[in-house]
Image (cartoon, rainbow, N blue to C red; front, side):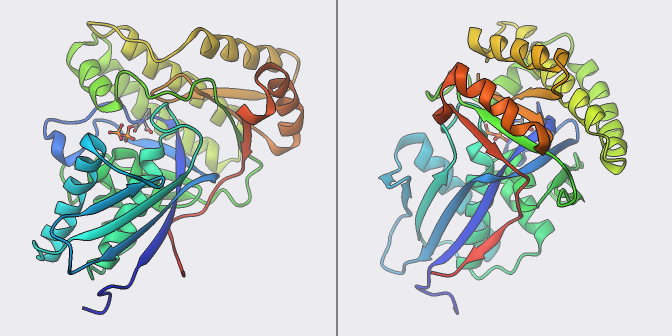
Length: 332
Ligand code: 2P0
């Protein structure tokens, strides 16, 4: 009962998958992926979530970015808190949740659900008096959003496919502290994506004729990118990341009905990145389930690349970030 009425505040950073998770196994509720994924946690983009056990509540009360959460957004948080209540064996405890995103646009491919559910998992589990280690926290965050399992950790993080709830979790593969790597986030569109990741993955798994090839290639990408990380080989890390991202999008194009997360501007930005490479400025593109593009680069080239994209998109749409830290608890 020690946390009764005491707010617990957790901060989790987003991550960008360099080898992407795209598609789960049968039991959708548990979110067990079909391939391992590997990400980089990002410093500039994070969610701060405060969770308070409130004995006067008869239902959870949820604020997201200072607005009362409603509809499916509210339900997703309640469903997650149900898992926490079940684990804590306290079915009649309800919580005040206040989640503030410091992330560009919600649900347009910046994976804010990763930081949101990682922070919620950390704050809610502690507010419910559960004492979870980082592996358990990663498994819990996974139940909210697959990519959230990776946002528990700093640097380069691998999410192991596993076979069930027990064996599917993320862990740090390598620290990025001694890496000369950064990410420039290009915001092209702020509106909500039309096909959610979950729907998109399901459609790809069930209808893309290339899906079984994707799993094979993603698993070999994991092995190769880990070797490149060991060797601090930026060129190979960048090449694998860009190739893997485009292959993920090839699954959407080849689904039935096919769907496309890119806009025309997404493709223009990929071409800009390739043009910069031709000019000897090394950088690589990666794109999540949305139109926005992230540019992987080395710190020494970051300002040159940013100047280029500032001119094209306006500086408010071009944000540079270095690798970020793992989950942390904040004092009020
Ligand atoms: C990833 N994505 O590995 C892949 C790559 C997007 C593209 O995991 O249900 O945030 O949408 O909140 O895990 C995005 O899906 O799940 C995702 P939802 P999640 O990062």
